Length: 144
Image (cartoon, rainbow, N blue to C red):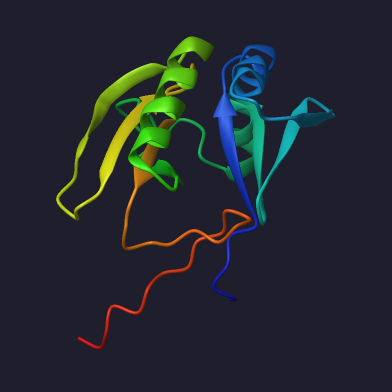
């Protein structure tokens, strides 16, 4: 298996509401067969009905506490961008779950949850340089 992620699919309760939320963040998507696709750099973020996604993945009836054990991250170039993105997300209807603050790694980050509870971290990490197109490369941490 190649070390790559092609798509991240988010199970949503209401497709129209979820699409509207992401469009208020400035994203532009295409709806095909009750699924919305957003080009997000080199990968695709997909919105699909949560029940249909669970059935398709074979995980219906597993229960849980509402947190899927995953956080999506969006890195930005400056601390000010962290605050700006969190403000746009709040205006779009997100719940700020952790206001921006200094991090243990010398950066600055905060988190929000979209209307379906998917958590996004918005972070400025001076150790992870972003290319002009927004792509990120893991730095060489040296051999351990």
